[in-house]
Length: 377
Image 1 (cartoon, helix red, strand yellow):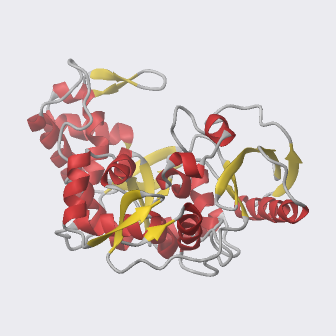
Image 2 (tube, one colour):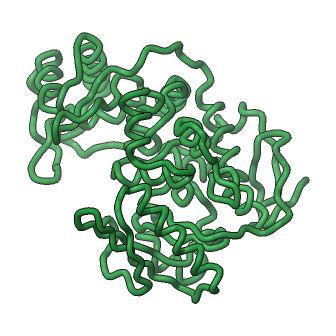
């Protein structure tokens, strides 16, 4: 059995994530997002930055063109029910995989929770009303869903940011996982929803997603995949069983890679990178104690959850956090380091800050010092 170390795994993951010494150059954003296994886009600007930072010369405008003009990307509900950018061509695989998550894994309290029959009604209502017409705002979609199902769907029982949401909204992510809805272009400041692009269904999406995840972030285990995807471990283990995998020893522990995918770099990881909120690399990266060593776990994780802080990545490990504040075209970037950087690393950091400014289409200024704001600031 092949034995691999953390430096070997870290170097390979960085290469495959477009964060190594040789980024993806002028690749299509959809190719980048495919290799990332989706780009988290709950905060859209962070999702745009995640992808654009991996490409030479790309900006958030290029990402929006790929999403809304060329439609090579799609914005929908991905792993863990969170909003992601996914390659449009791969949407059937994602739908097949995520729709196979057993029902009841995520539940709502009594008085809020819908029955399985009500959930199916809502999902099919979303599918039908969006297939029949143009993009809808959430209020327009809500009226249509309640009209198609019944007043119970409109009961305001779900706590929301500044009020209560109607009962049917608890099925929104599931509707995305079942291929009934994706996001449409904004109508002014309002989010819209629309029907997914037509495509042939995929049968073994779960096995396919396991292989893609392991190609990007392996070696890994079924429980790590389950945490990343948002399903139970038994479901993940079933996907591992039929995916054509090979067992390795990763830092002395059993883990899996795609069969035959056992080449690892001999050189340790090198380089300085600034990664935005919920970058796919840190969200999927495990074990956490290796990616966030020592003080990084206390400073850059929030209750063990990765992504709440933008991070400074040095030689494949989290070694700080950062924050950007925009005022007009000016972007103030503050980087808090947990260890002193060498002169060469400081030059790389300057280059990264310039690249952040290019991606966000502004003029950046770097300050090295404490980041005073909390997560999600």
